[in-house]
Structure formats: C-alpha cells, structure tokens
Amino acid sequence: MSIHVPDTAIGTFGDAWRAIGTGRANLSLRRDFYDSAVLAQSEIGFRHIRGHGLFCDDMGVVRQSDGVRRLGFTYIDELFDTYLELGLRPILELGFMPGLLASGHETVFWWKGNITPPREMADWTSLVGATLRHLIDRYGIDEVRHWPVEVWNEPNLPDFWKDADQAAYFALYAATARAVKEVDAGLSVGGPATCPGGDDWVRAFGEFVLAGDVPCDFIATHSYSSGPAQHVPFGVYQTLEPPNWLLDQFAMPRRVLAGTPLAGLPNYITEFNTSYRPDNPIHDTAYNAAYLAPVVAAGGNLADLFAYWTLCDVFEEQDVPTSLFHGGFGLLARHQVRKPTWHLYSFLAKLGADVLALGADHLVTRHGDGRLAALLWQPLRGSADGVYGSAPTTHRVRLSLPVDAPGQPGEAAVLRRRVGEQAGNAWTAWRELGRPFSPGRRTMELLYAAAEPVVEHSPLHVGADGRAELDVTLSRHEICLVEVVPVTPVTHEGLDDARLLGQGAQQR
View 1 (cartoon, rainbow, N blue to C red):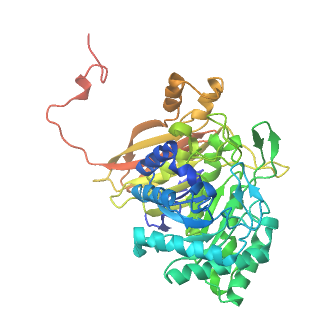
View 2: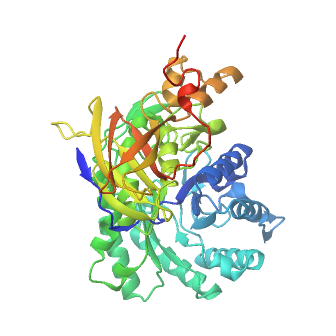
C-alpha cells in the first residue's frame, strides 16, 4: 500500500485514550498494582482511572458495632491519595452495595460484590453524599469536580444488577444523581454504564432523564467485541467481531440519542477491550495489539474518553489467577511484564498532536518541532464464515512523507520500534520456556528482556521537493512506531569515518 502523507494537518490527536481501568478498588492498595501504575505513568501517562467496588465491604466504608453505624474512609483515602500522587484522576463508579445497606444477598465474583438495590434509598443517598463531602474536604472542590461520578456498573446484566431490573436502576440513578448535585451542582454525574448491546437501555435512559428532569452530565457505556465463551480449565476462547464493531459501539450513544439534548453530552467509554473475560489468552498476544490499533487510533473521533480494561493483571474477577500469563485484561502481566498491547499504548504516548493521515493501517502525526511519528499496524481480516481471524505473513506500507529537513535535498534519521509475534512479546517467550505457572528469577529476567521492542534505525534521504520515501514491511500481527527526525549535520574537523577500522575500505 502506498500512502501520500499531506503536509497539512487533517485533525488533532487528543487525549481521549489516556484513560485506564483497574480491578476492584481494594486491589489498588497492593504493591504490585502500585508498581504497575508507577511504570504506566512514567512511560505512558494516563489521565483517568476507573475500577469497581468503591463501596464493597472490603473497602470498610459502612461499618457497624454494637448497633452503632459509622462511615470509615481509611481505605478510600489511601486509594485516592495514591491515584492523585500518580497523576490519575478517578472516575467514581458508585457500587457495589454495602452489605449493611443491601436489600438482598445476591453477589457477583468470588469476592462477593453485592448486586442488589438498597434496602432504604435514603441510606444509600446519605452514603453517596457523605462520601462526596469527605472527598471535597480532603482534596478540594476544584479537584473533585474533575472526577466523573458514574452510577453503578452494567445494570443491563443480571450478573451485576439484580434481575437487570431497568426500572429499579432508573430509580437508583435518579436518587443518586440528585444526591450528587445536592452536594455540589458542579459535580459531574452520568450513566447508565451499560455493556455492549445496551442500545435500547441507552435510549430508554435518555427518555427517562429527560422526562423526569434528572441530572445527567455524560453518557457512559462499555464496548467489547467477543462472542460466547468456549470454556476450558482456567480459561476461555472466543471469536471476535471486526475492530470497526468496537468503533460502532463507541459511536452508539450519540447515534441512539441523536436529536435529543443528550446527544451533545460527553461520551465516555468507561470500559473497552477485545474479550470481556479476564481469562482469555487473546489479551496476552500480539494479535490483541494489532486488532486494537485502528480502534485507539480513531477512537478519539467518536468518544471523549475511552478506558482500556485494564492497567494490569492485579485483577480477580474469575478467582485468583494461578499463572503469570492467564489471559488477564492487563496491559501488564504480574510483576510489570509488558504485553504487546502495552507497547501499543506506549507508542500512542510518543505520537504528535497534529494528525497528517489516518487509514486502515496507519496513523501519521507531527510534533510541534517538526518530528514525524507514525503508528503502523498489520490489518487483520475476516474469514468466509464471518469470524474475525488472523493476518497474512507480511504487510508492506510505502509512505511518502513531508520532512522539514534543513536545506534541499536534506537528510533525516528514522527510528523504528517493532512489536509482533517475536519482537517485544514476552507471552511467546513464556510459551517457549515451557509456560511456567510461577517463573523463577532467571526466567523472569528472560521474560523482561523478551518484552522489549526491537529497535532499528537508519538514515533517510529527503528530496528537493521536501519529501522522503519510506518502505516498511510489517511481520505477522506487528505494530510499530516510526519516528522521522530532520537532521542538521554538524561539522567535526578532521573526522573521517573511512579511516576508522571496520567503517571504510581498509588497506593492508
């Protein structure tokens, strides 16, 4: 494929992708999570983070002793102190139901998040109001106004909201949203945080909030593209829809709410990934990165925020993981082992603000100082039966680039970072090392080394027309970052590389 990249920007590459998910709130108090978040902020730089279970009993918020009830914010303070220290602003997902306030005993996951409505709505809204006032007292109103308040998680699934009772959820949402606004009208509240296929729920939610004049400052939904789970011991396999299916889901809220006042609200995708299962090996692969590349490249054109689910494999929805690689959602495996999709995000962090070209296999950007940065990926393909599958062995891209090199003709330098089935792929190395459940120190050292992208560099000639031709051949499931830097040669008196042993023609 030949791509003529124009000199004039066609858009801006923003920060909508700089959001990330995590597990239940209590897990963010662990050392492995903290170390992972430190690494993420140093190499990528996320802006928002969202997780479940803020009000689960293991966060110790609603406590009772000898008939006396008290709210405790010890763990909540530790949680948000850590987030803010790392430069992360929370998306406040309100849930699950504290046991002392719950109307029933139905729970989800082995850690038993209660999915029932409150026994008394007034107790729930009192909890919400008291928590927000505490956060404002601790962090200041100007800070907390930047924290979206999301009411519950995927209420259109009976696993997460008892009987997926829409009327009960709408009642919870209305009471919660009004409680939020009673604390401060400048706080941002929204929902319905539905899983994929929730189009009718979003439509009904819009009708509900408009008919009842219920506060709503943003629309939140989730997007996954996997089919039914095919179970195996400690894992699942699934088929996938094409990547554009995810982008269609990103666009769904505004499509469904078109023509209403809600269509102009911020559109937050507070979870997205390929598979919705935390035990699907697809998450550990280069395929996952290549599949998601066109989604993260174009997602900011459709959503104001989209959060990859999740930062790391400190995550326990399907019990406690028993192996280093187990199909976890994380960009990082345990102990900060980088996965291929991690590198996709680290490449995004190195792109420029001006978009010069966006297509089926490329996103070309320019920095303010003239450097070009292009994300390239090998497009995947569907099969005759509609199942989204793998890719050919190689894929060639020819770029005609506008390079602002001093003097014409000029020179530039090219740096390329590659990740694929072998390069930058600790999962492949782990398989080759025998798939150890808990690798020892030496094996971990090998995995860290295998997780590093391959780096290549070369000179690039810039023609008299200010353009350079660059050929890139991508291997199977490869993503790569290509950086093109204009070069200003510096004269070193007396320097002659031809006289350096091994660099020029040598005489005996």
